[in-house]
Length: 491
Image (cartoon, rainbow, N blue to C red; front, side, top):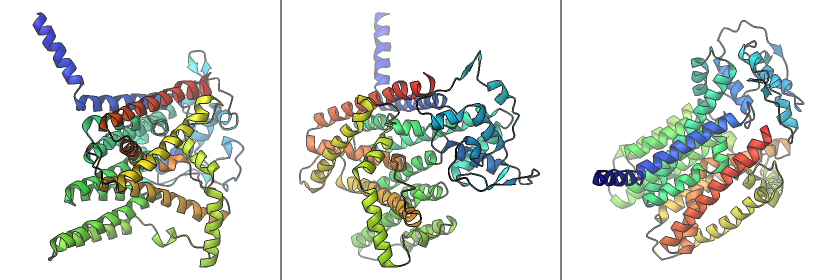
């Protein structure tokens, strides 16, 4: 009996140490934490969430619209939730849920409780309002692939109240976020990191506070992020195994779906073209003979098909203002206003989820600590790229160069878009909030620790740095959840 018990214990501990179990645990914890956050954030409080949900409802409207609409131009300065051209259901639900309290009163909370039911919950559950837009034009965020997928959930639960439909789509976002975590693990593993280091990096990405929050709301970026991760994985596989139909298809799917999700996916298309050019050049250089025509034609045809069906006017992406001299003047003005410590600080805080709701030691100093670590890691990356020393526990230089290229290309893409709007309005109306850079979260975290590992030089120090990074990220994530978000809305 004793021997049998020992065997069972050994088998149990052997099982829980397996990478597949640890990975599954990370994914389950991320998903459950995400579901908790979907319930923690009150309805419509996510970034542009009401607009994105209205996009879903607008797409879901019947083609034959029998109701009358009222012409109402978009109000520049919206004083209340009623000023938005949303569906009747969204406007009325937001009003009875006291959404304006969240919008205008940072240090106030809403009285959710009304005996057993939530406040006004019975009125909302009775579905007295229609999910139709009665104002023309409606306030929407376009007709992206994410919204089209959200419509399917809206249809499935069409007979349920808005809470069921809305929070079901939020949970769908969490599923997409969980998929991205899995892809992050595959990226880390395929660039040559050991399994245990890949798992720790995956856990760090899973507990990155802003990413966890963002994956719990309705927003098309929630689909764009896993598509970026998918493209990064396909590119890494092409660098590892050479260009083949599998990794080529992965990249094509990511780019194609990305362009139907958000314009930021243009960055992936640019990197895809660059990678294909590199692979063709390498093939020609290695073989020095005639190479297969399909090896060259298939990528070119795929790129042309993607560009044709994406319906983007790619010439409009080029920033230009009347003349070259005016364009250069505009660029100088833009750089002087956007490249400031204040702007960088804002991007960093919003990237890491430091919400700024409370003035305290942790929130005020966490991103400063991260900045210091990133500066050190940046020096480590430079040392890694130019050093002749072999780091057996770190990935090859080609992967690091590619991940750096992904970081730089997204930075340039976002800032060019910001500059184009600056040309038109004279202000930083788009800006560079941290959430715009989350699509490169996996690349960023991997590079951060590669840089630290290069400076630390020894594998055991690299491992300790990863563990410390996980502890810090986990602690800050839990702090924001229970010491910032929870009291902000409920205490």
